[in-house]
Amino acid sequence: MNTFYIETFGCQMNAHDSEKVIGTLLSQGYRQVGKPDEADLVLYNTCSIRDKAEQKVFHRLQEFKRHNQGKVFGVLGCVAQQEGERIFERAPHVSLVAGSASYSKLPQMLVQLESGNRRVTGLTFDNDQAFETPFTRRDNPHRAYITIIEGCDKSCAYCVVPFTRGPERSRTSESVLHEARELARMGYVEIQLLGQNVNSYRDPSPAGWDFARLLRAVGEVDGIRRVRFTTSHPRDFVKDIVDAIDENPALCNHVHLPVQSGSSSVLNRMQRLYTRSEYMRRIEWMKNARREISITTDIIVGFPGETEADFEQTLALLEEVEYDSLFSFKYSRRPSTAALDLADQVTEEEKTRRLTILQEKQRAIQIRRNSDLVGQVEEAFVEGYNQATGQWIGRTTQNRTLNFVHPHHAAPGAEATLAGTFWNVRVTRAGPNSLAGEVLG
Ligand code: SAM
Ligand code: SF4
Image 1 (tube, rainbow, N blue to C red):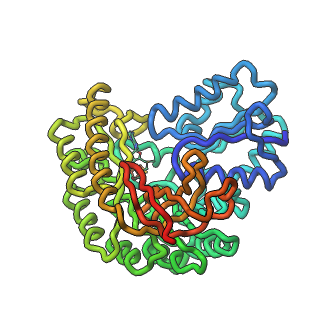
Image 2: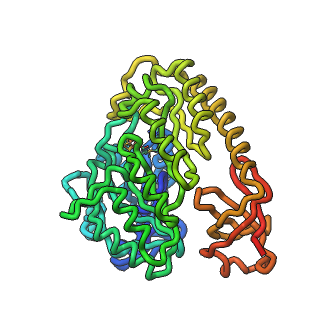
Image 3: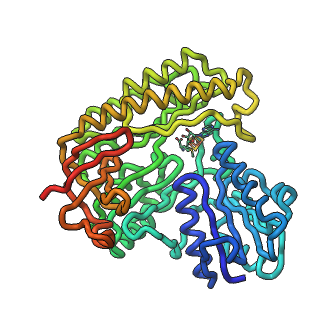
């Protein structure tokens, strides 16, 4: 067993977990391959946040059920933690089932697989430390993720994360800063701090830093030009974070602050721990900041008992905040969660109707807000090159996509020269999801 293939589903946390898993496997002498057919070990790093995400994994496993050709299969991540040993019954060709809280034991689990054990599990939450490894394998040479806190201590009524990722474990500020400095030394210019709820970060070392303190320190690391963070829970989002953004231009002026609903009664039943007006207070802090902070959010439509009036309050909130972008989801019933057995489930048809209305409203807001930027100059960080359009793909500090042409760098193959660099770009066109412009001469 010396080659492996890994497919990752779900959020940035999962994508970054996979980078750590890949690094660990490489350090154990494994070689990564690009197709499951070529691999001895096939891993799926899974997501179970919504029903559809979970189904995808079993669909993948089903594809190999008959022709597994002696391969070893492993299910990692949220579905592994949620379904546990039931996966062995549902997909008997699977040999490894491990949740993210057990990744520090991966080397031992690999030894067990190599010695022929075909029922290897890592499902306990007995680890009170975050998974740290010197072997993280990052594919992007310019932007790096750093996990600062794992797990979640909230209990939102719809959410599986506390069950699949376990209780909160923060890393020490020293180890986060060491990693940030090391990344800067390697040439990384952007860092994204990750956690299910970065705002409840608490340095476990005697320094005892909170999130705003850590954010400031990462923003001061020499060579790091941009720092982003996700996700923020409104309950733990303090004004000091806005002050930190105001003070240091390396901290991107973008905050993703998931609201989930504009109705206080729905928020209460969701156990979100804030009201609409408490949420709006946080929005006010950002609107009153010296820098213009871009605000994005997550919305769930059709939570059990959500009335038409509740939904209209969510639509009104969109207008009031004027989000720059949002992720919207139909409520999905999840095992073990408090909302699972709530009465008054909203029909699938109604959820679809509300989602469509919400997305149309948001599209109009984005067209309006992006149009206001035409004529302005924005700094774009180049992420790649689009051969089809002949444009560089850039991102602004506010996290907008800004595609642009460059008079001296338009030749084929030029992408290697601009990726990872910054350019001042005048915005000439705006669409609902991106901007286009020209580099300043
Ligand atoms: N920790 C983040 C927070 O508190 O906002 C969210 C993490 S979750 C991976 C990302 C988003 O998925 C949530 O903000 C929520 O909108 C959505 N989500 C979570 N559970 C869901 C469910 N059961 N049905 C629909 N959407 C869900
Ligand atoms: Fe899930 Fe709520 Fe924790 Fe976010 S804060 S991960 S939505 S339980």
